[in-house]
Amino acid sequence: MLRLLVVLGVFALAGCGSQTGYEKAFSAQSALVGNSKEFDAPADQTFRTVKVTLVQQGFTVEQVDAATGLIKAVRSLQDPKRSAYAYLITTSVDVTGQPSGKSTTVTVAASQQTVLHKDSEKYFHLLGIVPIPSGRVHQTVVTKEGNIDKAAFYNDFFESVQKNLRTAAITAAAARSEANVSAPATTGAEQPRTFPAEGNVTPVSPAAFAPLSAPGNAAPLPKTTLDPDTLTPIDP
Image 1 (cartoon, rainbow, N blue to C red):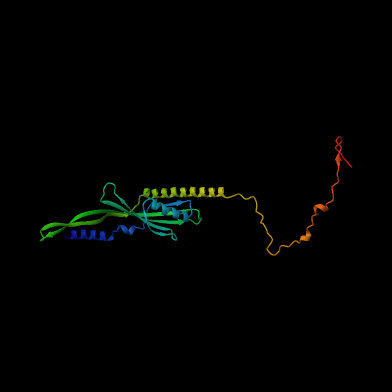
Image 2: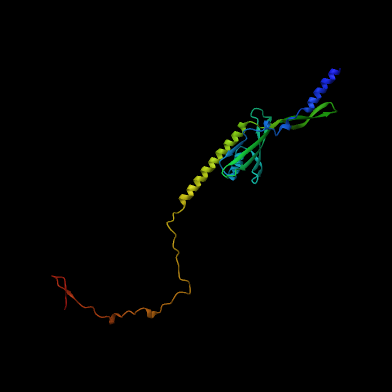
């Protein structure tokens, strides 16, 4: 009997000294791997691209804070084989620019819940004996939840962000090239045209112009004839 009590006491002490799983949440062993990536783009452009990528992948953006670079989004996925099951994915994305201003680090953390949707009949018991159907009851049961720690899950997201960044860079380069082609070439500054100001025009009097002689007062032109042999003028 004494031996049995000693064994039970040892097991009780061992149970009190054990740690639960959540106590190691910040330990190096439980840290996520492969959920961070650096992109060669400024922070503002990367932030917009991350937000667009989440929407493209079917996530509903619930919170956006450009000042801190934080985005929170959720998505619900139906199980393709079991219609009663769905997966609720919650993700938080941190976008932090590097001191150089030319690159940005994106860090993602996501968790998932496996949700079971059940419909059951609701019965009313007549006289406490006879069950009579009175409607249906819908129940939602979370059967599993936890962090997503697969590096491939985060890598798929990073590849989508990188693709959108390349597309945005190509579009911006094409827009700049088109703007340069459509802009008119200038060879020099155009000289401004000046006009006399009103009130500064000097009037010109009619006397400034010489009068034209009347046709009757004009001196007659000398008459000359040409020698047909020499084509020289001959005075009369």
